[in-house]
Image 1 (cartoon, rainbow, N blue to C red):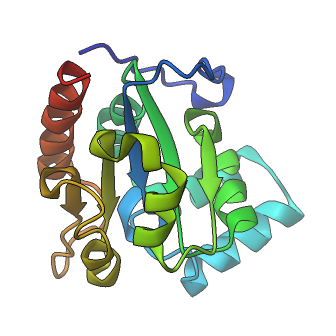
Image 2: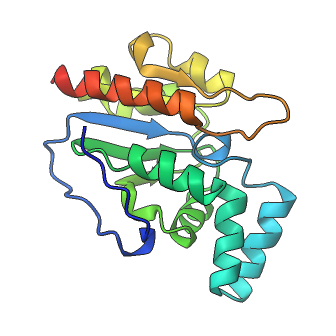
Length: 191
């Protein structure tokens, strides 16, 4: 499996937008891609400060608050989002503009073909948007309601729930990352 561990996330070019993508990885944003809810007071305060003064220090503080440590970004998110032949999309209940701004500020926006926001009925949305390739959509979310909405829409092996351990960082962590890599590899082989 090919992936790039480029540390300079802000200079990464958008990947090809061709229709030859074999798999779609549809990720929720809050507490899935991100480690906390982006409406958290702390994140909102850092975001406001970054908008007022977009310094490197403010960008770094916002990135750490939303996505976790540099180690999580470099060892989990970048490799997960850099697999050749996968179309990456965000399907969030949060406001699209805000999610895009957080991704952009953190240098991760270019990894995603689309960001869909204000989606509460994710099962119906996925069914309509990806109707011709549902067997190749892998869905990841932390919220049971959205996981339940996928029943009958996607194959069960393509639905992943992000655990929420008490007193530990939320979002995709090492164990789930490894399971996702295996499922993506299998999806690519099934083409």
